[in-house]
Image 1: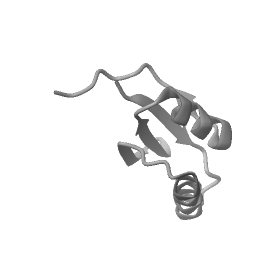
Image 2: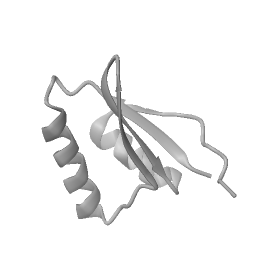
Image 3: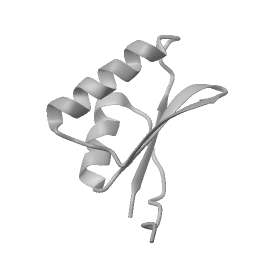
Image 4: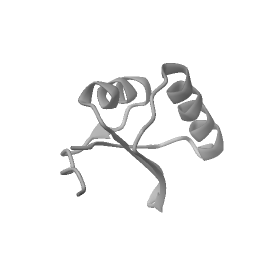
Length: 74
C-alpha cells in the first residue's frame, strides 16, 4: 500500500522547492516510490511512500496533505 502526499504552494519557485525536497529525501535515505510534478492550478508534487512514517515525516517537513493510501499494484 502506498501512502500518497500532495504538496504545493511554493511561492513561484518550483525549482528551488524540488531541489530542497530532493536534498531532504537524500539526507534521510528516503526513496519515494512516486515523485511526480503535476502542473495544475499552480504546480504541486505527488509523492508515494511505502510507509506511513516516511509520508508523515515528509508532511511535517514540507506541509501538504496525506491522501488515502493507494492499494499496492500487482
